[in-house]
Amino acid sequence: MSIRGRTCLRGGQTTDMTGRVRFETIYPGWYVGRAEHIHVKAFLDRRTMLTGQIYFPNTLSEFLDTQVPACGAAAASGS
Image (cartoon, rainbow, N blue to C red; front, side, top):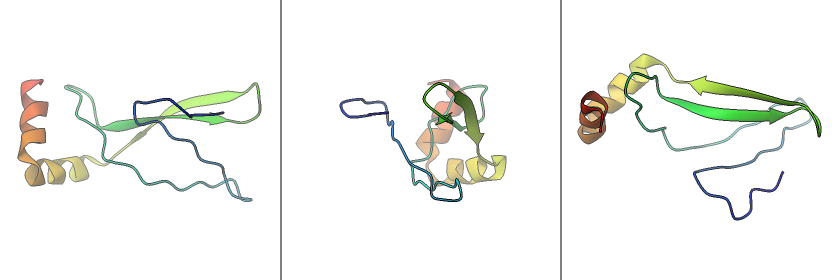
């Protein structure tokens, strides 16, 4: 799958021989009423795709709210 020319913080990785992948990313934005998460799509072959979400521990989000107050305020206000 080519991601060339696409936006919205998209990326693509290929697994190693054991099926594992590692990536670094920014921490996702805040959704009012939703836990912080990243959307993922895993292609098993050319026709089979799994879609899911990776969630982060609440303790991490709470800690980051104290480090970046504007983000915590935005989450609380719905901005």
